Length: 276
Image (spheres, rainbow, N blue to C red):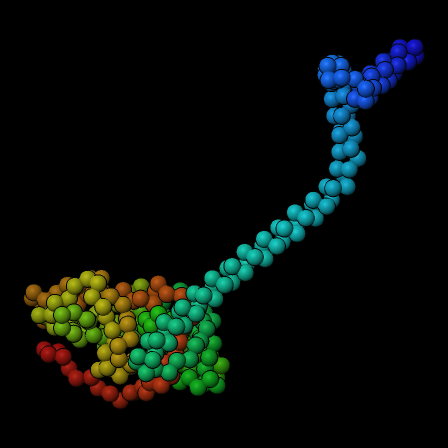
């Protein structure tokens, strides 16, 4: 007990000396007093901070957790807004592109959504039908203007679309080269089209653009189909043939359009190609 009194007495004397030094002593005495009492003052100061933090910190932790949660929720909200704006911008760009094509070709378009897709590449089911003015034979295109197929069967509220890659699909095309080359495109494997009956002397190269022709009456003229990826024949055979990559395969099938002002010709007989 006496030892504790001695320590307390020493501490009181040191603190008192520090106070007197600040009030009456000169610079030399102040400096000496600071030097002697510095370790004790530092210890007392740290202890005070530790006690203060220990008492106050638990109350701040709940506030910090709530603030972090608020900031996290706010961050998610803004990120979602950015994604929504980006999606809206992309959709507007696609819409402007297809409207430009429609204006050039004088098409009337009706947007449709896809309800189902055959994994074999034969057909789609879209969310509009007879009640929306759709009929069999109307052409379906992507937002980029690429040919998808035509309505094979229209029901009251939805329609089944025959894809151009289906084995049941066959239509006339025009291969854009130095001179336009007419051919017949047929579906089959769901991933490409086979073109046939191209003239033997036609110059057909990979990457040549393929569009619809008017001969068969199944589709409006000048709809983009795809591009040539392979060509063979012509040396001994009467015609050339090859493969077409259809552009709709790399498009977003969630944004499709029906060309509604095209009159389907059902009794049209295409003229026979030379040597056919």
